[in-house]
Image (cartoon, rainbow, N blue to C red; front, top):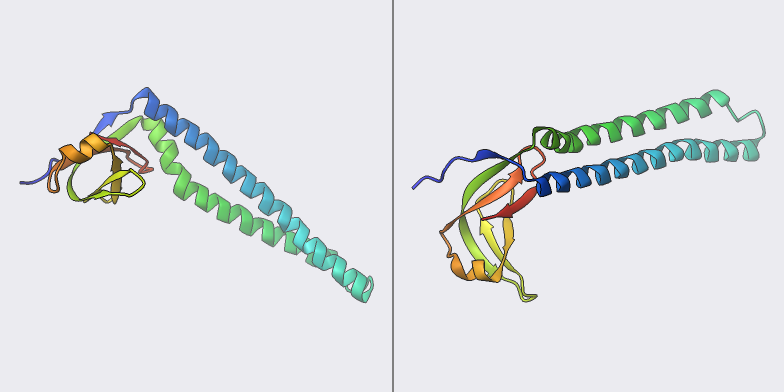
Amino acid sequence: MALPAPHLEAMTTEELSFLTQMERKERRTYRIILVWLLVMSFVFPFITSWYRFSDSGIMQFSIGKFSLSIVILAGISLVSVGMVYQVYHRGLLLDIKLKKKTVSTHKIMKKVAVAGGSFHFYIESPVKLSIEVSESDFGAYREGDEICIEFAENSQHYFGYF
């Protein structure tokens, strides 16, 4: 029997709040990384220029090379952080804007009880390989049963199962 097709539903306020908090944390992390890289883009050329100046005299130091090094390193930093931001953060922003989540049904391939007291289902899903479930659900479901999972459409953040 074929599984039902995934469908979109409106996010709950808790799910939207979770994504909004995650977006703020990630944006702050990107900002910290960018500032750190830009500072290093100045520090490394300064160290090499200072070494050249003190080692060989004033004739070896070049303000042009120093400036070019800063521009190149800062450019690489800006482009790389910008690309990572666009690839990973854009989906999260789109999910917050659309306020929709995907609900899809998957078969339980394997049940695993971990020694630490947690219980997991391995499922056929491109979003999640396994999900942690409660002890009562672990006993109630069997391998081959169907379970629904909820996740954000673009960022693929997992919300839960039922």
